[in-house]
Each structure stands twice: as C-alpha cells, then as structure tokens.
Amino acid sequence: MKLNRVFSAGLLGACLASVALPALARPQIASGDRLLNTDFQGCLSRADRFVAGLSVETDSGEIDRTGYFEDGTFRILCYGTGTESMVIVFATHNDSADVATSFVQLALEELSRN
Image 1: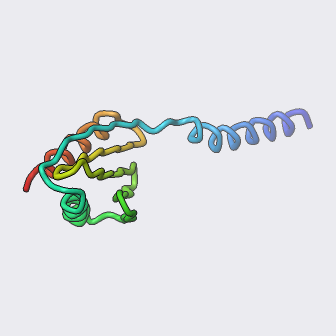
Image 2 (image 1 turned 180 degrees about the vertical axis):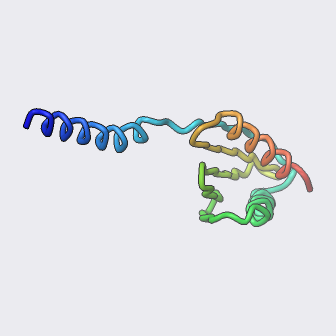
C-alpha cells in the first residue's frame, strides 16, 4: 500500500514537472534599428518583400509586419521621419540569443537595400 502511494506521488510529481518546467523557459530577445533612405510607405514595402521571401505565417498592421516561426517570432516596425523612415526589428527565439541577433542583423541588412 505504501509503495503504491509513493509510486503515485512520484508519477504525479513527474507529470507536474513536465508541464511546469517548459513554462519557466524564457525566450531570447534581440532588437535593432536603422534609418532608411525611403519614406514610410517605402519602409513597409521593403518589409513586405522581406517577409514574403521567408515563407512563414505573418500578420500585417498599419505600421508593422509580424512573422511566426516554429521556434520564435519577429516584428518589423516602420516609422516615418519626413523623407526618411526608421525601421525597428525585434526577434525572439526559444533557445538562442545568437539566432535572434543574427535574424535582426539579416533583416536590417535586407531592409537597407533599395
């Protein structure tokens, strides 16, 4: 009878740990920005071309584009500054800050191209 209780308590503990431990994991976040030599609409057009090339699920807002990967997400924000625009890129990755940072750098380079 005692062995049954110990086994049941151990099994319950293992089940709870398998549910609770992944919830404690924090995504790794990176961000960057760049001034672009295009207006606000040009920034959004560049963001649309970049996102289309990734072939991932996306959402579009008035000033942003968001993409969803299996292991992370990204958001590209465009702000007008007159004849130029500011682009800000945020990326998250479930496990690696290096992956998030590399994605931000890649996105900023691609968005800077004409």
